[in-house]
Image 1 (cartoon, helix red, strand yellow):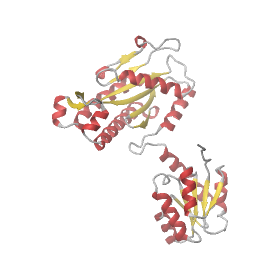
Image 2 (tube, one colour):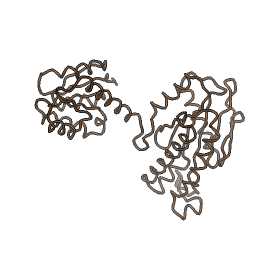
Image 3 (cartoon, rainbow, N blue to C red):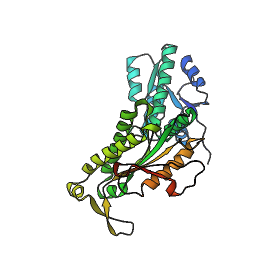
Image 4 (cartoon, one colour):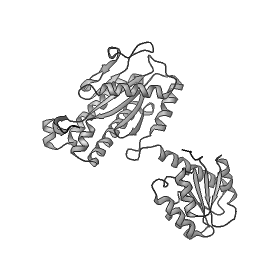
Length: 333
């Protein structure tokens, strides 16, 4: 399958040139600029490969241009594309452009410096929105990799921690997707507040997706941060169950074979990898090992964090892994 090269699209119903400041800004993006004159072509190009930006020239044929803008923004897949409308200088056209879905409006005759600042700001907002998870507003996989890469480059001792919920699927099956989503947001809030509260600017929290999270913290803060996360989570999560389930400490659910079994209340498992005893050259190496440590933590009862203490020369025998954090305590593998 061929991947479309990213480009900028210019939708116009006339052949007049764009204002010089907008044209110069487009050229500065370093991507091909493709003129488009029909709604169907616009949607087809946008669906094949997300454009860097779409510029709608509404100085002539505004109704048709606004119709194209509304159609682009009506589809959730293409709605994320940043859209600029070049409008006439009137307040009415300015308002109509935003009502049609514009992310930024450049009035004909606006000053060059102001236009460039506003256009650059629009792209930064768009890029930021694309790399955060929509439900938790935490950075996603791209930002997580960039953060780990930056810390590896800096060389200071740090820990990459992979947090995951235990018995989450069974909870969703018994309650609802809505209740499960609320539990994910609770975990996100706990991770963010604890990491930022204890580490401030040296802590980072990201959301891979679902109930999987990554947080990156200074090495010395691992016991305090992970211990606090486990403690706060175990305090809050029982209240996401019915009183009957909460008092019992479990509920009966069916396994894949349809057999009833006891399902404990949700717990959190955290796998911790550090650069204290290992040398990593890229983020994927740490991610792979953090996934391994998280999987190991999930084999232990209760909320737990496990810290990898192996060196580059050691094997993968579990006896070499420091278990940290069983039931709020600390285990290392």
